[in-house]
Length: 246
Image (cartoon, rainbow, N blue to C red; front, side):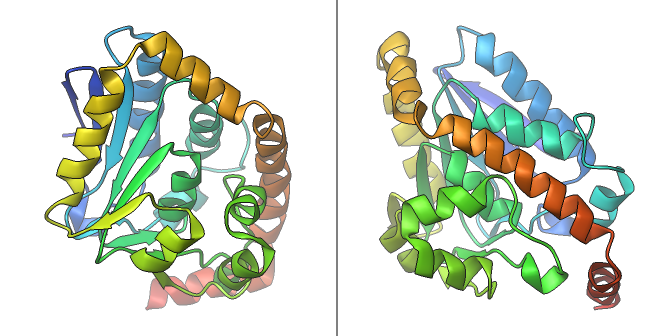
């Protein structure tokens, strides 16, 4: 049984992270499933919008570190790397519903979404430096563009956690509701998007992304070089080992 469940409703492809025993930590197989779903959705005329969601108490605890490291070098064959580029260039609207933990990629993925709705119990964190690593997914340019340099430095350098209200103030989140309402609200907005003329919506998204996308793709590539280098350092290895011991 896949840890990514799929359901299409009136033009909305719902992709749900379904690995509760690991707090929806993303495995390489989950990335493969997401990649395949997004590639197919990009050209499927029946899919107008993608809705990405977790559960009512957890969006994603980030990468499954052991599985991530075991997948080898961060090159074009790595499922995580493929996911970053596919999502960054995805032509159709992506809506996210976030409740509970959104750690690492669980937060940076939202920077590539077009609409983000969060539950009041959502907790975001970018703990890269705490693991001896650096930002990924283009977050080193996308977050400062969204939230300003100082606030981005607070969360990318110190790795401090922040809640849904702060995320909304930063512009990362469109609206905050209760965790019992967030999935329904995100689906409502996704259905509203799906009912609009698809060509107009996709052309508008392309225009919104036009200036930023080349820099985003360049930044993803630059971050991956540093991420790979840092991943191989003794300090990073020690911090990751300590993480597994906890």
